[in-house]
Length: 259
Image 1: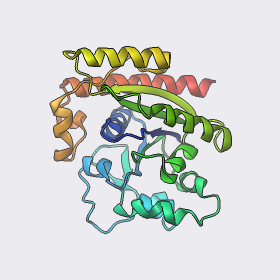
Image 2: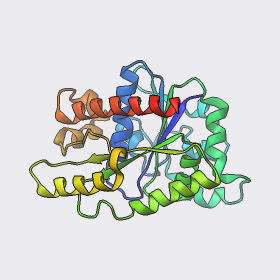
Image 3: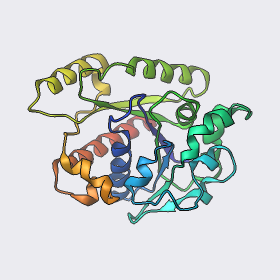
C-alpha cells in the first residue's frame, strides 16, 4: 500500500495546491511513483498540471461516491511517475450526497485501497474547509502536512484543524500523524514573516520544517503555464525550496514508518 499524505488547511490561499504538486514532482524525480488526488472543487491542482477540466473525464467526485475506481479516473501527466485524479466542480455538492452513504467517512480510504496499490505515495490536495470531503482525506491519510502562510492571521483557525486531526485520529484513524507544518510565502525583507515564523516554531516546535517557502513570482506564474514551478523554472528560489522541503518530507516519512 502507498503512504498517503493529506495537505490541509481550512484557510484558502496558503499554498496547499502549490505544495502538493511541487512535492509530488520532486518525489517523482527521485523515482517514487506518485499519485495526486485533487479533492478541491476549484480544481487548482488539476489546472496546475495543465489538465483541461472542461473535458469529459472521470474525477475525484465519482471516486468519492464509488461510481468510478481510482484507476478509471487517473490522468497521466508529462512527468514520469506522476499521475493525478482530477477535480470536478461537482465536488461542491459531494457533502450532501455523502450523507446517505454508509461509513461515509471511509469512502476515499476504500477507493484508494481498492485500486491505488501500485504507488509509493498518494498526496491529497484538500479543500479549504473542514468538510466531510476533508474528513475523508484525513481518514484515508497516514500523515498530514499543513501549509501556513506567513501573515498576521496565520495561526487563526489552525487550532481548529489540529483539534479535528486529533478527533479523527481518536475516532476513525489511530495511525494519523501531523507530519509537519510548512511556512509559505515567506518574505525575509518583512519583519512580520520573521515574527510569524517565531510564533509558529514556538507553538509547534520540531513539527515545523526547517525549509520555508519564499514569496516568489515564479511560483505564482507557474500554474498559468500548466506546470509545477520545478518544471517552469528549476533554478528559482521557489523550486529550490520545494526540493529541500521534499527531502525533509521523505526523511520524516522514513522516521514515521520506523516507529
